[in-house]
Amino acid sequence: MGQEEFPEVQGGGSLILAWQIRNKRVLVVGGGEARRILNVLNADAKVTVVSPREGLNKEVAFRIEKGQVDFVDRKFEPSDLDDVDMVLTAVDDPEASTQIWKLCKERKIAANIADVPPECDFYFGSVHRDGPLQIMVSTNGKGPRLANIVRRSIAEKLPENIGEAIMKVGKLRQMLRKIAPKPEEGPKRMSWMIKVSDAYSLEDLCEMSDKDMETLLRFYAPDKVPRLGCLKAMEGELDTF
Figure 1 (tube, rainbow, N blue to C red):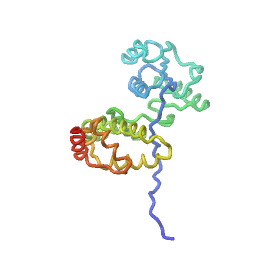
Figure 2: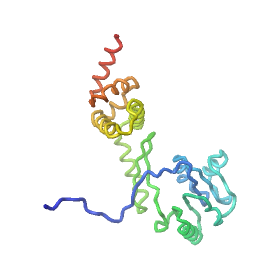
Figure 3: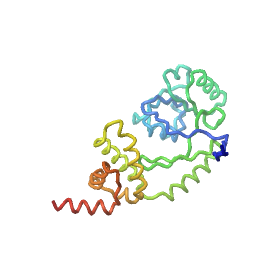
Figure 4: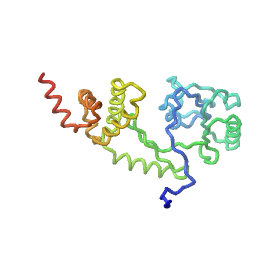
């Protein structure tokens, strides 16, 4: 049996995941981390900030005032970790931060201790967001500023309205499930959607209307994917009847 070529293992990285924390409880210790609070709010988490009021920055105070996060006006206490799924800390006391991290380890709670990479179970990367599209660039805690530069460079090269195109693909998938709902059709649904994604450019997807999608779904049963121009020509023919 001949030697096959496989990718080499490159240690030292981190596993980048889309972590679903909708309705999970996130504890933020310290009132100065507005950016990370916004990140977890965008992921529909339930956030509690524990900090003396005088330690709040303007944005965190605003989110408390608007009821977007819960607020406890005092310093951290170990009981704050009860029923918590994630912890973020940003306090000007390295010893206190380390103690919180150790408590999180005892309770098996994922934690991020600001500016202390060895005491982080995960890192916040630099994120580009366009609707459902999220692109994260991580330097594994080594160069956050460079991550921002790389992220901006990537974002500048993306087509306009790519988020809208992705939303339309998601809508097409939902429409497809209605006409082919059986579990055994899963492989065919997946295969056909791959053909759709390969056949149409991002510009085509942005241009695609609901009527285009309805016409396209007629081609699911025969497992075909016509060009967008053909779809629109067909719609004109159908409209004459």
